[in-house]
Amino acid sequence: MGVLNAGPAETPLTGQVALPERIRSPWWELGRRLLAALGILVGTVLLVYFDRDGYRDSGDATAADPTGTISLIDAIYYTTVTLSTTGYGDISPVSDPARLVNAFIITPLRIAFLVLLIGTTLEVLAQRGREMIRITRWRKHMGHHVVVIGYGTKGRSAVETLVGNGLDREHIVVVDPSPVALADAHADQLAVVTGDATRRGVLQRAGVSEADQVIITTGRDDSNVLAALTVRQLNPDAWIVAAVSEQENAPLMRQSGADSVITSSDAVGRLLGLSTLSPTLGTVMEDLLTYGEGLEVAERELLVNEVGMPPQSLPDQVIAVIRDEKVYRYFDPVVTLLARGDRLVVVRPAKELPWAPRPGTHNEDFAADED
Image (cartoon, rainbow, N blue to C red; front, side):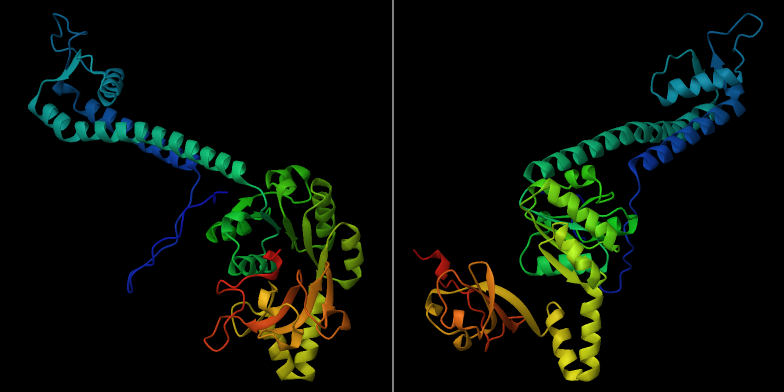
């Protein structure tokens, strides 16, 4: 999948001013340039008409008026055929001032006029063509991706965590109706489908039916429930993670098809309570929830040399073992010894340290790969 925006700009040198890029509609740019071309046309007509005594109209020349008087219509006619390089030659400058004006003013205006019209037409066609090709290529390669519904604080944090754990930004699609979210997602180099995620057509354009995971993080629980129902209808196999503001809505969210439900208000409330009762414990919990700093909670595969070992003896601090799609605490008798096919939920440094290397990241063999 291609990302529907330009790549990151080069880092500006120290001391230089870097202004944000101003993105405008191609139709606005076309209108602006057409107005500029019209201004050139009107200005040239007035220039010719005010200096009409320096021009001769051979088509209107008579015995009484051998030079042919230049009228306003003649000035408009001469301007259009001159700026368009048609040049029939029936009207021509005859005085030295008129010829100088044509050489040093009208000729540059002719070039600017052609550049505006032809250049603008080519640019608009090329831009629309490139955009259509990019979108077509993106849709062709879209699949097994992650759809993030809602790009507020929670959505951005979820995307940051996914990217930080190795997911390519090209495999993330954001769905949000807000222009602010559209600008934020494009700034983060993400593809965006603008629209209401409770509508089937919007989710279909985001490729929900081919997505592996869907994250639902809108600001309203009722919208989250309806979005989950629609997603589950379009894709019965997708793994849906949804956020709800109130705990009482969590069962309804699960009934709507969500595989995992996060209660944001309760989670924040518990963290506030822990920080009040035990500031140090609250600090540790906040550290676990903060991406890229201190400690992190992660899931990894079991290594070959770890098969048959108790969870407590591993280099990582194991807090849970996933066996046959069930989660067991590390002290559960069922997982006293680790077996092939197990996956581990561990607490480890957010960044690998020399004295704490990360198992599974140095070409070790995984137990799941062994016959």
